Length: 208
Image (cartoon, rainbow, N blue to C red; front, side, top):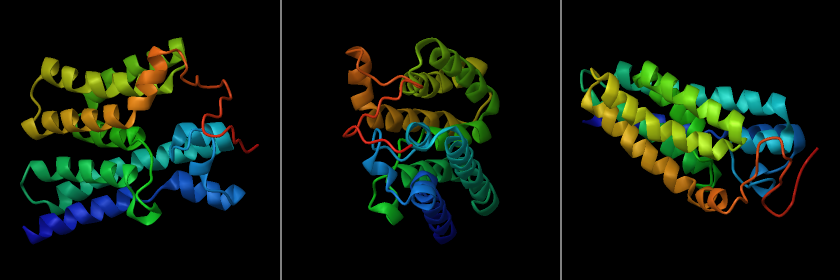
């Protein structure tokens, strides 16, 4: 039990590394949570810092999820729940980072890393549909919601995956929908910022 607790703690601390905050501080000397949408994630990094930093943040946030699941596989023994819980711990760290006053991102990129490692094909199929929706609507938030909504659906359709993976996808979906609750309202009201629109969201602050 002790090793499992230590493993989950390590994954939470890993998830708490907010690359968006760190990169914005390093490149511009700013707290990115005070600019754009106020979110510490890849999409807001794109708005505030541009494509290059956004790609770096996206890849590193995805990597956090991948590494967390593998830490669970290596240190968790034969318990099937441990890698799944490690993925959830990393997402919780990203959303509520202990290093940054528990103000983080929305966990989508880290979710991609977690679910792609636990169940590659369902996550890939859901991801393709999510990307298509983003291309058609230019709403990243809508694509994120579609991704987490369809992943458990494809898990059921394809079958053969352990129950911990399915229930992890449900828990993650709840996390993502909760973190995007304001975005859902804006989408319904047609007020959500579209990717590439240059909308600043929070306080109109933008760094060029």
